Image (cartoon, rainbow, N blue to C red; front, side, top):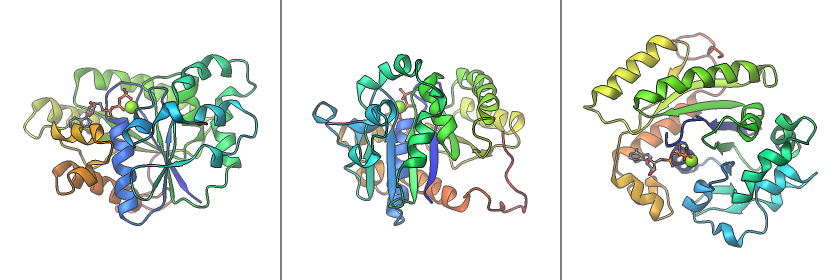
Amino acid sequence: MARSIAFFNQKGGTAKTTSTLNVAAALAERGRRVLAIDLDPQASLSMATGIDISALDHSVYDLLLEDEFPIARVIVPSSIPGVDLAPSHPDLAAAELELLNVLERERQLDYRLRAADLSNYDYVLIDSPPALNILSINILVATGELVIPIEPHPLSLMVLRRLFDTLRRVRRLNPEMTVHGFLPTKVHHSSRLAADMLATLEEEFPQMALLPAVPLSVRGAESVAERISVLHYMPRSAVAGAYRDVGAWLEAHAPGIATSNGTERAYA
Ligand SMILES: Nc1ncnc2c1ncn2[C@@H]1O[C@H](COP(=O)(O)OP(=O)(O)OP(=O)(O)O)[C@@H](O)[C@H]1O
Ligand SMILES: [Mg+2]
């Protein structure tokens, strides 16, 4: 069965989309078959992987809001070799209101993904919107695993308390979810802010893993403009190397497998 991993943080600009895209590319480079699902109405992941959203017939909006709409009708090839995409559409912003009237509105994505035939894929990676709304709760209920991209910023730690409160409440609807931990992004190696944040994370969340950190790179943003991954745009860059390390880390940390120190991973 495909592993589903959501990149989630309700704070904006923590590199959720950049991480979804480049981890997808890294896993594909390792020969894995990857489906990326864009669940952000901003549709940044769809645009960054070469999709013309104005020309789409269907998007994840149809998947979520229509009864028994097959995911196969939504999936398109992306610009990243080995990666397919279930694209988003700005209409998805309306889903929040429309889901209000739906029975079991938090479980719609979960039901759709459970009903879908995803046997073609090893990984389903989910890009999340910067919000804690019904759409994002749907992601937390549906995903098997969670990674929290976090950037060195004084506000980053403050939003975590609310995120973990939400995770505790959602746990009842998704008791099997593995919260891996934090993916530090945009890390400047000589920045005190970054060193302080990493030390605070280790101190306050000892049960959470710190995934391989992704360095700050101004040129990294250019790959988005080129609509390809950093792994293809700058294959030998430190950012590409970091995302390869994140891909390898995830492969080594499938849920249920004992970690290197012999203990089962803790849950949030
Ligand atoms: N390693 C990096 N170094 C420098 N800039 C980066 C890096 N990773 C991402 N960025 C830039 O940071 C900005 C935010 O990244 P991204 O869009 O991936 O974040 P996000 O969490 O998906 O944002 P949103 O919350 O709006 O969905 C973008 O301009 C992106 O190009
Ligand atoms: Mg994004």
